[in-house]
Image 1 (cartoon, one colour):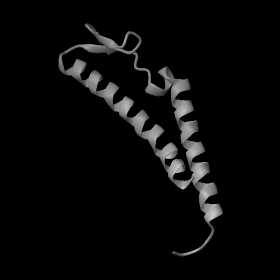
Image 2: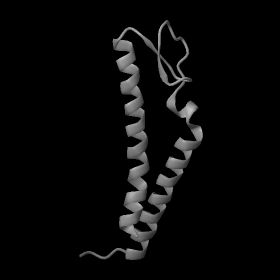
Image 3: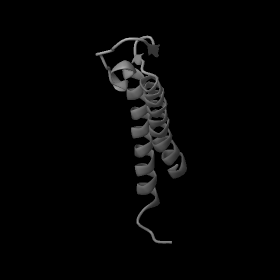
Length: 89
């Protein structure tokens, strides 16, 4: 149970950070080309964009479900540590 808890704890956060980094990379590529990024259309556009919405605001359900899954993993790890007890190997 400890192994599964560790996996369920870490993978959603790693996945979310990867998605955020991927999007940030796309936005930076647009800015380097002298364009701006439209977060609603999810593509590079010409002109100035004043509105920047955070990743969390655009993908609220997805981010919350991944973080909830991570909390479930931490609960599984905690239960496994309690079941294992305070023995030293």
